[in-house]
Length: 392
Ligand SMILES: [Zn+2]
Ligand SMILES: [Zn+2]
Image 1 (tube, rainbow, N blue to C red):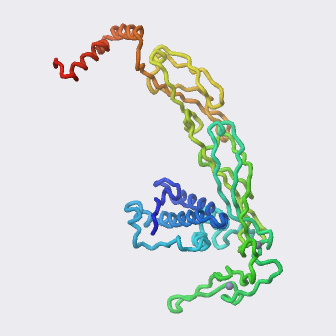
Image 2: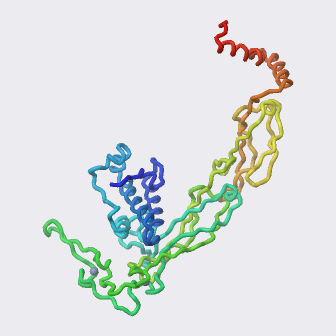
Image 3: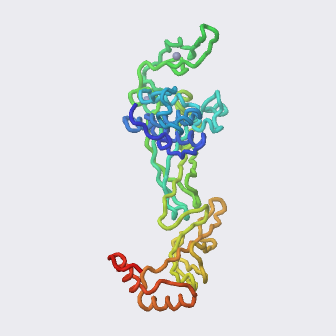
């Protein structure tokens, strides 16, 4: 086996991720790197397979435990697939319960047994993409351009997969039935399944369409402008109904039915001054020792782009939080603004001029605490010690 990356890293999830997080992360990567959406891109295919391998392990609690404890070595000899040599389409169908035809299968959207159908209407896959915005954009709300690839009905064959003007012919594997019977345990049981050769259609394409190579779908890039509401949180998704894919060709060759949705997952970038805590904003500001002791008015920037005067109360302590009500981010729902919480970092002067030194020494005398003698004599004593001088 080639060098294998950490499975959690591959899926981009924390070690503490639960089964749903893992499923969601895998679904996102599989949809993104699916070779049908990235034709001729070997790197995308490798990523698609890598994600499948990581998902296969992390979605199985026993294997995940082995992996957590012993790493890749812990999985040696346990059953698993070698995805690197598998056909992407087979991998996709292997985990089809998580794609579910309805895109959110396994999340209670698509009903089992009638995959991808709701009330008899075929539904396409949901897609997911990401958009990164700044904290200032979270404050004001914004529109972002997203660029993604989805599979659309092939315009040449209208989704049929057959070269225009050619006829389909009956599938020989199932005799045109679309179903095959499998027997097991020496004829003890018999199971009827959908024919793998024709995918249950009963007919196969005699001559495939040259544009989609018989798939009925072609990847298409699409750009959209998406409105991101003010107050959005990192990791939340904006759903664009009907911007996903048309129903899969097995369900509806011409793509009739309901298109899936596009989920635009929002990532909020790191801000150099502000940290977010819910709808509140935290910021540290440096305050001088004298400002902290005597109180002061300090001008500070706020997320709305304006600057506001912060009243530092007399006797402010290191790490003390000073609240500016209503200067935080708007709540996604109510649009009411959170607070700005300013944390005082009191700076101790590293250098003092003569006058400051004199005043500070006078101040120290009032405190009745011992302080170091004046620096000149202090340093000369240190030098004496270092240069083998007399020890007192
Ligand atoms: Zn076609
Ligand atoms: Zn067949």
